[in-house]
Length: 225
Image (cartoon, rainbow, N blue to C red; front, side, top):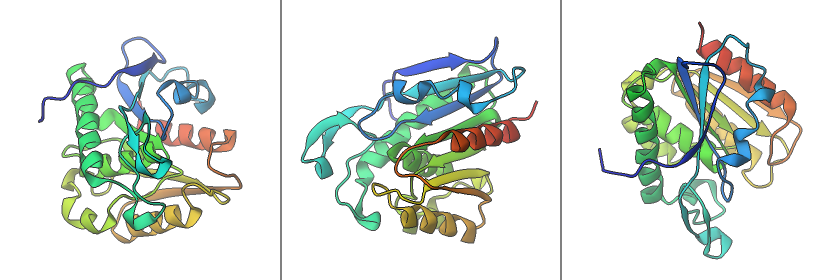
């Protein structure tokens, strides 16, 4: 694996000696702190001992925002579903994610007790990295996001995660990551055999309490005692 520095992250543990990890990737222009207060809202049982990691994306110039430098997992080239992501940057961030997963395994967390998720750009990266990860993960979470480079997925998807459970949620009024992009991604994944729990909410590009509670139930389901 390429020698990358481990990304800094906000770290929250719901109990002593965690036996599971949730890695959650923020959206464009945000940082790990932006989602770190979601943990209590998930409604997880008090008996669950989960380590939450909210890593901070590197800063880079983002083409679609006039070259402005901001935290980003990859450059966005165009406001188009099929030509949106800079794949070189996506692959670089995938290595960062793989390093975070590897570090959790060194800390004693079994790979099948690791959930990878994210919102918007982070959710898209979570799908990209998780579906290609060579060892089995517990589940993937993608909020207000889409499948990056769908044409490469059949050839690049890892056998270990060919049926990994996926939670997807999207706002019907999302004008940033359009609803039909998310829906098309869900249909693509289902067509290729992935079990997707799909949730549509009457909202824009954001999150609501009902969605967060549903995500919590998904985490509880894929991380049984």
